[in-house]
Image 1 (tube, rainbow, N blue to C red):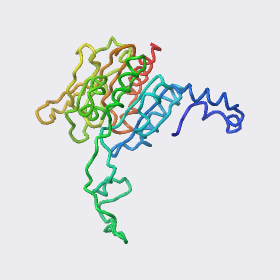
Image 2 (cartoon, rainbow, N blue to C red):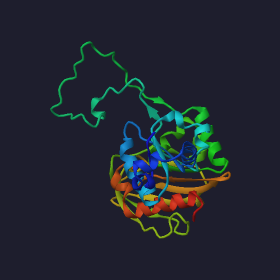
Image 3 (tube, one colour):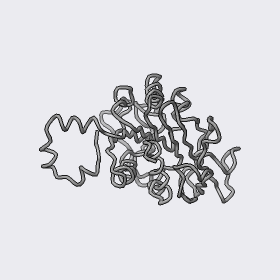
Length: 281
């Protein structure tokens, strides 16, 4: 599981080799963030790059990046202060039927797929991966004092686990195709939004049913061109934060494209969120 840290970028390989086994183990135990990233539609390298700049280079946090779902368990989470998740609720253990889902495939001019001997056909159906134990692990991690920064399409996990849904506080309604919209600050007094201006992004405008106290809402997405989605109008809740047991939770909806993650105002918002979650502000 790759780890990025500012120190690792600045120190030489020789310096790491000089670490005594006990000291190296202590550094392993002191990792601050576990980031579970990536799915079929959201490449982990994309988000490791995006959050590597924000969390690691700029904030000097030590982060374990992974797409291994089995690591979302109680024993593993006890090593960290902050859990970050940016991924949806589906996996395709038997493979995908559409080759265009592979970023290296070009629909025009691509050759016919041939395999000799033939590959067993797949129905290409997704499986919802989160287990009851994993949902409880997330809930207990936060209740006992941990922090959770949940991004973008995690609302697609909520329909399949009550504990996770209660921590997140919302369940997805879906989203239209990528289009421009404004992210509007609705609570300018919270430490997460302080000093952040409204900004415009081109992204998936996610719609959801928000299930917590409206006082916790911080931002909304607004399509200023008047474009609606189904019967849900032009606006959607796009971010909130609250205490949960002894811990804290923040959700931020923007995040499909790296240009969104690195929008200067959104970077401010994400950094403020991390400081608030870790009780640094």
